[in-house]
Image 1: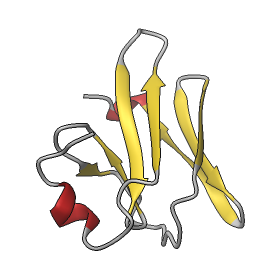
Image 2 (image 1 turned 135 degrees about the vertical axis):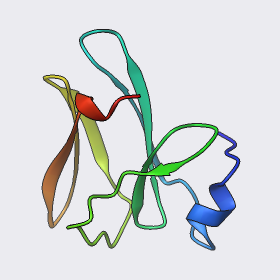
Image 3 (image 1 turned 90 degrees about the horizontal axis):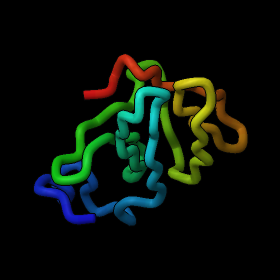
Image 4 (image 1 turned 60 degrees about the horizontal axis):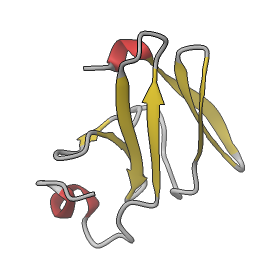
Length: 88
């Protein structure tokens, strides 16, 4: 995946460490990725979707689709989800 703003949003981190394709019940898709302790959506331009109330300390996400939501989880961190309302 090559993005137009990857170097500015990922900085000197290890880059993208997790990628997930979300598909809702209507067949709409959205690509999520994680890197630099942030969650993004998009392919050609990465848009930060990190919830303001979360402090992310690693990018080892396990991501699944369930009941029209994308669930992100990892060890020792609360689960959160991004609803299909965020699809563009």
